[in-house]
Image 1 (cartoon, rainbow, N blue to C red):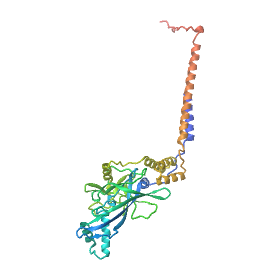
Image 2 (image 1 turned 180 degrees about the vertical axis):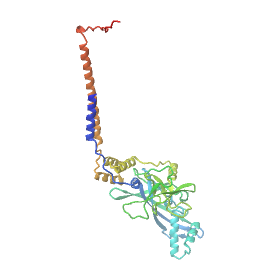
Image 3 (image 1 turned 180 degrees about the horizontal axis):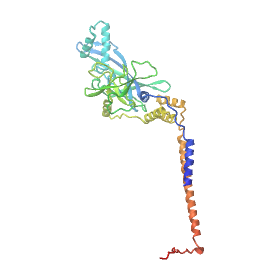
Length: 407
């Protein structure tokens, strides 16, 4: 027993000496800071170039001249599958009156107003919507569109990729679209599948207006879920975070960084714009219909774990996880930045796990050797006792009963 106690004491002392120092105190962080850190890598900047003409179906007059109208709009999107699937608002890419056709109508009304042919702008727009159609390069063809998705990559460069529409729900029916770009191993976010209760803190993330920021830095606006709405049998959230043009299609995320909804241009039938979000369940239904899974990749899980370790002050572990993130998703600039910050705070890769493993194996080996020695000592002692109790020539000694006392 003394030997075992000494072995335990020796191993405990060795482990104590080689164990890593306690993590340094982390910089204070708010839930909003962590949610933004989780979500921002998956935010993308979307531009749509619309080209077409407007034809009055009553008079046959065509507006736009020989060249037609060119209109460029910007929106926000969020990657919801590492293989290049992006969710956004459908009014950004839809060809109908609340999308591309509407932009063509506005361009035609602007041209007519300059020539003095518009008296009441509201009445003129309604008339245009009722009796005109927007067309592409040929009669009865939808207005032409070119969709580009951009994101930041290392060395301060912007990666621009062409996008196609996988499927969409019209703006008046839910305002969701799913795009596909020829990229993989992208940072992506989870969808929140349950209803977010009223009062849930959220961040609205996107690119306000037509940003000229060369670094594509999205904006975060914090708020909360204000109310649940159901319009055209589709769930919407009313939320208090500010959201402006350009942020349409961007995610509304909870404090775990999950996509709770997509910022809409305004729920159908409501007069206040940019304060509503299509619930993530509509996104999930659209994806399911196409056999697409909203998911994260291994690099996303490494990144999230790295953030948790970083904000806990465990910079050694953070370095390991951010290293793994960059290896799995080489264009993940946020992981590269946090990796640099973890290094600056003293983090070292694989700092202490290997030595502890070796110490544990060493202790186990010492214990095995010690037990073997104890067994050998016990056997040797028994053998000596057996020899002492055996007479010459090996004859056994008789067993003598103990004398009894007379009665």
